[in-house]
Length: 76
Image (cartoon, rainbow, N blue to C red; front, side):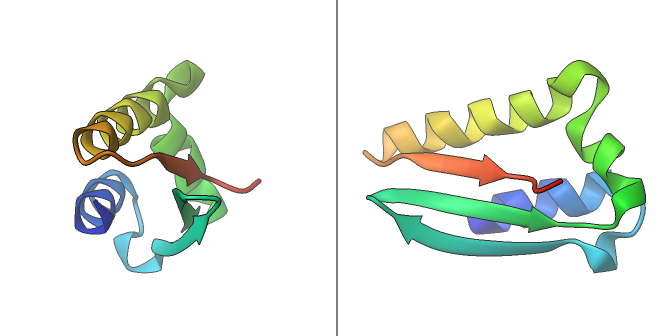
């Protein structure tokens, strides 16, 4: 999943070399945190959050297939 996230987020970002993804396991859930330039955040989130919602839906489906749970966080 981490490879998928890196691929998608870097393709969406205007500055792909400055997109960083960290992973942590919290309460049995995989938590991915995205660090990116402030200028790239609107591109990652999309209009009305549609882009990030689509990415989260794909992650949820992949995690459910493997019996896990996942969360994607983009800090302000």
